[in-house]
Amino acid sequence: MNPIRSVVIVGGGTAGWMAAAAAARFLDDGRRTITLVESDAIGTVGVGEATIPPILGFNRLLGIDEAEFVRATQATFKLGIEFVDWGAIGERYLHPFGEHGRDFEGVAFHQFWLKHRAEAGIGPLSDYSMSSVAAAAGRFARPVPDPRSPLSGLGYAYHFDAGLYAAFLRRRAEAHGVTRIEGRIAAVERNGETGFVEAVVLDDGRRVTGELFIDCSGFRSLLLGETLGVGYRDWSHWLPCDRAIAAPCERTEPLLPYTRSTARPAGWQWRIPLQHRTGNGIVYAAAHMADDEAEALLLANLDGAAAGAPRRLSFTAGVRERLWDRNVVALGLSGGFIEPLESTSIHLIQTGISKLFWLFPDTRFSTVERDEYNRLMIDQFEYIRDFIVLHYKATRRDDTPFWRYVRDMPIPDSLAHKIALFREKGRVLRYDHDLFAIPNWVAVMLGQNIMPDGYDPMVDSMDDARVLSAMRQIAEANAAAARQMPTHADYIARHCAAS
Ligand code: FAD
Image (cartoon, rainbow, N blue to C red; front, side, top):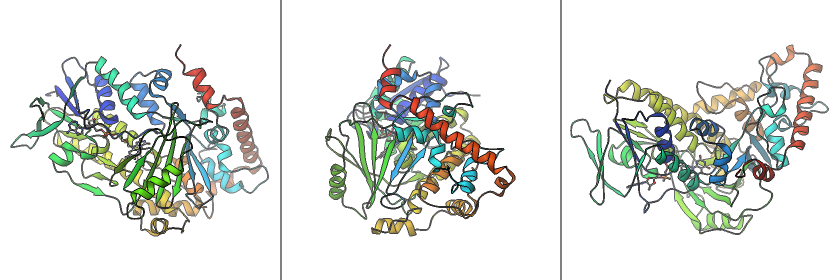
């Protein structure tokens, strides 16, 4: 074994500082140097404020105290995403985190709902999700481990200020020995034989050498894309949105515990409530909407006074052919980007970090470890791609060329199969390590009106009266629990204030 002694992280956005904080925590054996290079002049992408539940695990592994984190990053709690006008104009649904009801004897809860949904006293599926009921009431409380409590089925994540999160992680990383170098990388040096990256050279001539390079340089993909020439799988025929404009505005009341995504004529608009402001932005397809038109639409739909000038961004949905090539591993936007509809990018950074540590190389850089990393990560990107494409494909809108295009476009076979299976008897199979579980797929498919023709026949082997009584109890318990919860703003004030 020839352990890697020097790790260089290129870039100090969310990806760079997540990697640095995790490396300081898990790779520091006292003999390894971890260096992060970032350029204040270039700056960061400055968006990326909504997350999904696995972020809790990342913070926990780093030993981060939740209340301290909420204060430091102006965070709020997120119980899911509300989709407005996606299925059809005038419709809305919540994709909640956590469970819908409870599985009975190994059969997914939504199967019982499919059978009994027309019966007296049986409400919409959302009545059986603790997160949905709490979100609708604008309330929040943490889940509890006791399976008898309705709160055990609640799932949550955060909205946070991405800049403050990076700064928070930076303080922790630097305190644990990570060296930060400020400066613009002007050149990258490679070994003439192996093609491995050996050093990055700053524009003032400083050289930073390393054995393993983690490319967190953002959309530019300085090492993996530009230097090593790893190609890009372009998915824009399935995900035609390629522009975004971000425009924060002042906070408005009430402080909602969920993200809102509102479909627009050629894309959609996000609303992310933070403690000190509301993040807003529009994601759209340049082929269907001019930049000025998109900006005007966004600014006309803010629910508070604009706080700062709008910022325009361009991207192409897709992923690099490989995320690990030679001695370079790309994390964050340098490796790929699927539009932020389900807040999955930061999660992909987290996944990349954990898989890299799991397959951490030595200086021989085994190809088998590298191939396994690439297989796992590309699978992740593809699973997420399918889930995002579903939101577009499952529209019934035909009011603009954009919505007609996405409704009629061919989709990946993997997704077509999933939808066909669901249409039969509401079945969702979770493959391998698909990030999204059964309740996630079900929430979006039913939310956009893909109604199965039948239900799982296993349901008929259970006593209807018993099932109906259990279903009613779940809905009543959820409603009662939500009434007991503090409002979202009260919860933050009470539980996250400095002691
Ligand atoms: P960046 O933030 O761009 O950081 C790149 C770093 O590299 C910077 O520090 C820069 O200075 C440095 N750098 C680049 N070139 C050089 C050089 N030559 N020399 C030195 N340093 C250099 N994700 C979510 O999970 N949830 C969301 O809600 C979400 N919303 C998004 C909305 C939009 C419109 C977009 C575009 C993305 C969104 N994302 C979201 C994705 C999220 O923003 C990113 O995954 C996250 O911010 C990580 O970015 P990054 O660190 O890879 O890149």
